[in-house]
Length: 308
Ligand code: ARG
Image (cartoon, rainbow, N blue to C red; front, side):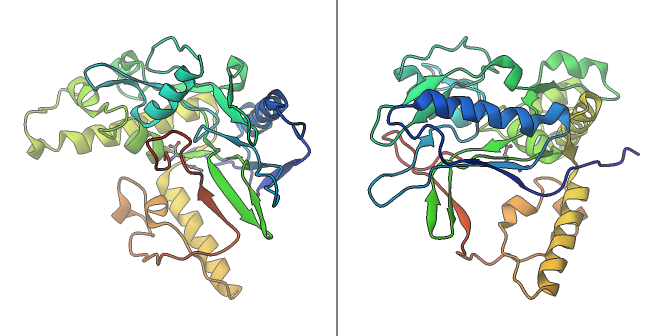
């Protein structure tokens, strides 16, 4: 059994003075690329947050339009289907309106759309070496690799406002490592995302004609096995949902012992598969609004609603 080796503890970068000059989007972009490299750390992913200038009473702070610094484009087709990640279809269309042209594949990395207060947004393509990815293969099924599935190595949330110490940091991207279920049991399998379960099930020789064969459930599990295996093989930090939930329970106990409450988002804590096989299944999470906290930016395009 492989031991989980993780670097614990959040590190922060002080970018409050970056790109202060009006219209200086490229300095912000450079600093965002400079966030990705140490967060990646050659595969031993770090918990890293970069705080840029907060809003002041007379000037809002900068922002990026992307929900994560690394994300794949989603191209809406005339028939309503999407090539790539349907989750980013609005952002992709917005980037195209600014003049960006993608290649049109399933895994085109989106440019960063950077906006200084009261300025037009500008887009910048990420250098390929700042975008580590993992090709997905399965430990027991050689055909799995032929599906051509991949995912970016780690998430970096970038559309959340950090409210802290009476200030609003409108650009405060933070990176972490993945839990395998986020990719295997959501991003690559949700019917409104990459929707890959039918292909995986067909590869496994399952009868997809009837729900009762539980082909979705079996494909979901093998896809998640494949994600964990592939990240391990590539030497990229990732945790399984059993480890992650035990770690959360330990954290919760420490918080209670210190006389603090431990507010959480149930859907972020209970994994998308095998919830009942983890120690967090019984948890009840009451909605709370405490500070410091993150809250999502309003989507910048007219359709409204935050992208998530
Ligand atoms: N679920 C999101 C994604 O699949 C990432 C959310 C943050 N996840 C994390 N492990 N810190 O990209």
